[in-house]
Length: 90
Image 1 (cartoon, rainbow, N blue to C red):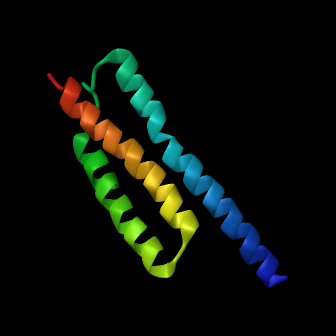
Image 2 (cartoon, rainbow, N blue to C red; image 1 turned 90 degrees about the horizontal axis):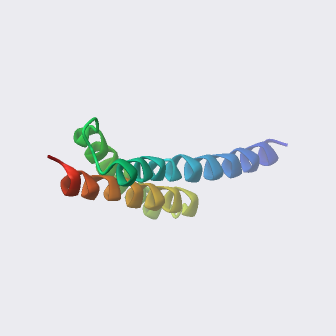
């Protein structure tokens, strides 16, 4: 029974991790639509970006594909936001 619970939590965590990482793309859409990063915190996204690199390295060290995949998605999203920041900053 405990193994079933752990497996269920692992699936939920993988799904939620991916959904959370996809949420960066709503910010990307907003930036592209407004062509502005006026109210964006670059520091926040740089910290997230570095944190996701660390999580990817951790995922690789423990061979956890859900951790790796969710954080690669987030890394792309945060990296895109950082790139757009430099493109649209005034």
